[in-house]
Amino acid sequence: MVNATIDVIDRGELQCDLNYLIEGNTLGSHSDPNPDTDYVAIPVFNLVIDHPEGTILWDTGNHEDALDGHWPDGLKEAFYPHDVDEHTLEGDLENAGWSLNDIDYVFQSHLHLDHAGGLHHFDGTDTPVFVHEEEVKFAYYSAKTEEGSAAYVLEDFDHDLNWRVLHQDRETHFEDVEFVRLPGHTPGLTGTVVHLDDEGTIAFAGDEIYQTENYEDETPLGAGLLWSHRHWFRSLQTLKEIEREHDAEIVYGHDPDQYEEIQSGWG
Image 1 (cartoon, rainbow, N blue to C red):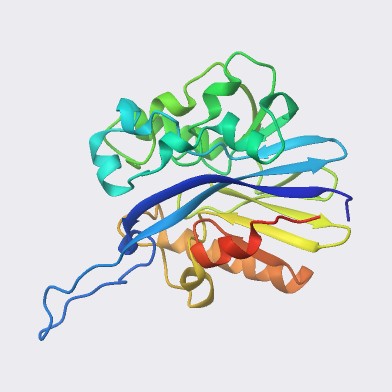
Image 2 (cartoon, rainbow, N blue to C red):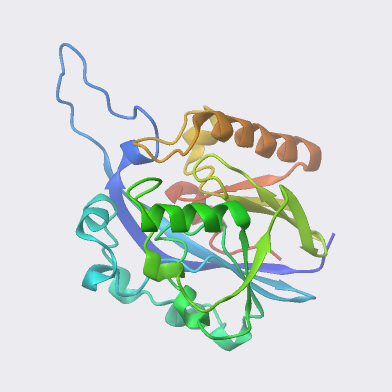
């Protein structure tokens, strides 16, 4: 167990169809062939892990120019960052009592547009940026070809960064902080398990789990947001094993109700 604190950094919201998050959330029937969809707002957040070995920024959120040409029109239509002009990484950190200069390390759960948009702040610096090997490969493959996932924006991550590439399924680079690869949403999505002195074990699932239904009901992510259903289900079981073994709290990627509960952070 480590004497660390974890602050939740509010990075605004995305607006999208809930079918993207929960497979089959809205389905037509004979008597109701064209039901209304659930169009919802979901939170975007980063973390600051204040660890004895350094201060870690967990994900970097949306790019502040998402609506001003940084995101393609199709992605803006699918995942509309309606309040992005009110949220910059620098400003949101300052609102939580931190600055960019406080950050010693960056960890990227993956490189999709709502998670990697602030990496440009570390362009040309020596700040280590942790990301999994499989994520880097898939992100460039997707951004440079017509294949892969459409949710990568090359300009988010194609910078002069001090990459610290993870290669294994589980790696520990800080005391009682374990990076755990959870492929499914993307090949290299990686969660983080932190064993805190007072709060116990917290497992940040990232986008392996969007909302409660994905975890408790084992309903997959929807609308083409799975690289592999088979890998996703296996990673879900990995999280449940971590929960059982450590009595861990599992933190989802974009659940509004849970987000209200965790905003005060840990430690």
